[in-house]
Image (cartoon, rainbow, N blue to C red; front, side):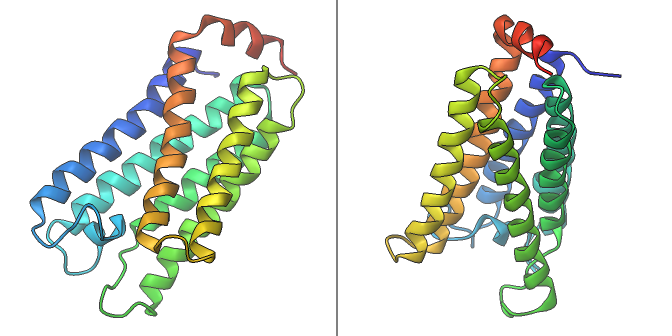
Length: 202
């Protein structure tokens, strides 16, 4: 059964709120964590205090919500491929709950963590491409998807060119991903015109 527009928006926005709350709560409770210099994944790394609870909250719970949000958003747009791509994005990110090993960057756990992030982002970019290239959608939905995809690629390119560090890239990627999720969710909750557009999309 297809969920309503507002409920889908609430689910998506909840994922953003829970992630931010988890970062603040567990970040301040860990004296060895720096909000400016450390990877967010450090909070869930092996040996860190409350790592399992951070992983369950910030990764598993949040990404379950993202899976549901992505699947239902694609359903609202009557686009099965989009549903699959955005669901796989959430699934890929849920596996980032595999704890990294800060002492052994090349460990199997650390590699699995990085692969999960890369796969999740790849599926998300394909989903944005699907959104941005669909002429049936509202112009602002397509423009937001294309702008977000470009911003994500540029943030990664900046690191490759040595313009900023990986921790900064890490924060940019999280900000871009969850920024798009938040804006899209708020639009679903409050913009009734989206409903008319979604219902007419095939």
